[in-house]
Each structure stands twice: as structure tokens, then as C-alpha cells.
Figure 1 (cartoon, rainbow, N blue to C red):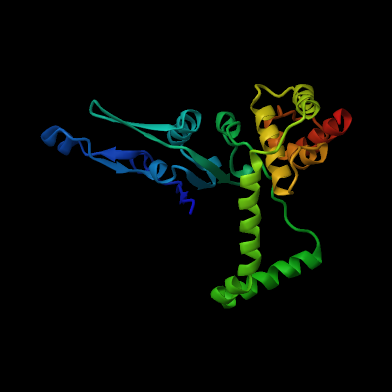
Figure 2 (tube, rainbow, N blue to C red):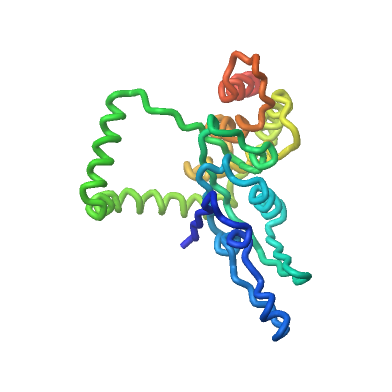
Length: 247
């Protein structure tokens, strides 16, 4: 099972990074470490709700760990280092505050959640939620087969991922899209290549197609565009427009 750890907004740096027992270190000469949330999330998922409201010093900690894959704890001249490789998942309302560009760039994928406008879909959501609230265990039991099938499909896609090939012309197309969008660095290129391969593996394909790229490229690049207050087109639409011109 992959651990999923939630980082609350009010968490202290010690709770996030972990603490060293200074007294034990001085008297016994041993490093006694109390793991923090980063250690618990190693090889798992770290989830932050309202991540755009996270304190700056904790954002710096996440940036350092995301860049190096390690967390370093230093107290009173004593230093300890442990692996901190995790998938960072964040959610938030951009109207309540913007996410720092350095952290935003670290997210591989960016999904924009909009309110459902279709009346039929809204009714279905209400019915599903009502059924869950009435009897959560029964609801989970009724949907267990569907969830198990999804879990199996994801597991098979993971096994297949290493066998998926990326044609040179597809890679060149992704690079061209990123270049024409004036995206800084190559993280967008790397993420788009990886996401397209994962999407192909999920759909039981052994070679990436332009359709795979189209399905993921907006998620990969939307948040990397330079904001233009005078722009008349949404960032996601802009990515798709350039994609259609290139591919």
C-alpha cells in the first residue's frame, strides 16, 4: 500500500521535517530522530489542501525536498538526512491567493476544476452523495468491483510503462509546442513526454501517438505559461491551439 500523508496548513516545521532528540544525542552520543511528515510520505503521496495558503517557510522545505529527494534536519550543530521522495498533490482556490511560481513549476500536472453545469450530471452527483451519506459501507461495497477493476488497470499500466516507446517525431512535436508557447526551462517537455507515455500505457498501447499527447498536454503546460492580463484566450485553449497547429 502506498502511504498518503496530509500536511495541514498549521503544521510546524518540526512536524513536517522531524525532530532530533538533542538531550539524548549529547548524553548518549546517539542520534534519536522523530520522523516528520516528509519521512512518513517517502515513496508515497503528500497531500496539501489550500496549498496556496501554505506558509512560505514550509513552501521552501517542500521545494528543497522536491528538488533533491532528501530532507535534512539540523539542530544545535547535529545534522541528519533521510530520503523524502514523494508525489506532491495540492489543491486550492486561486481566488484566495496565488501559488508561488517556484512551487507551481514543480507540479507536473495542473487540473482546473469547474462547477458542473449539466442538470442531469448534477442530479447524479446528488444521488451518489446521498447514497454514500446514508450507508457509506454499503456504498463502498456496491462500488468495490468497479474500484478493483480500476486498480488492476492502473497496476497493469505501471507494468507496461517501461515497454512504451516515444517516437522521435512526437518528442520533436512536444518540444515545438513548448518553444512556441515560450515556456521557460525543459520541465514542461519532460513532464509532457512522461505523461503521454503513461496515458498510452493506461490505454494498452506500446507506442505514443499524437492523441496521447493531446489528452495530457494541457494538464502539463497550462500552469507554465506566462500570464498576460490582456490575453483574450484561456491558457488551456492556448495550449490546444498551438498543439493543433504543430500536430
